[in-house]
Length: 134
Image (cartoon, rainbow, N blue to C red):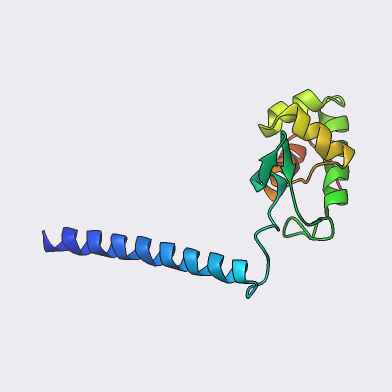
């Protein structure tokens, strides 16, 4: 019984610590005392206005993954995968990535911001389908 109470207390304490640290970091970011800002989020996490993701500040120069891939490079990678593995079909690529066709249209045209999750999934699809991307 004491063991269960101890484990439950430890779990609650860990949750509270996580919440407090998260709130503290958000406060620092909002005050400008931390690297990054609340506007530095990918399009999939941005505020939606008039059906489009709004991003207050350009993130084209920032890498979106651990391989320092820029938005332009990510768009090129998506186009290569779409053309070689999905018969140049945005619909098929959208289905494989679990995203909307409109989002794929924006990404491949350079109008939308590609997030790291989509790029990671696209690279995994390329590996599965033996498509070599640069």
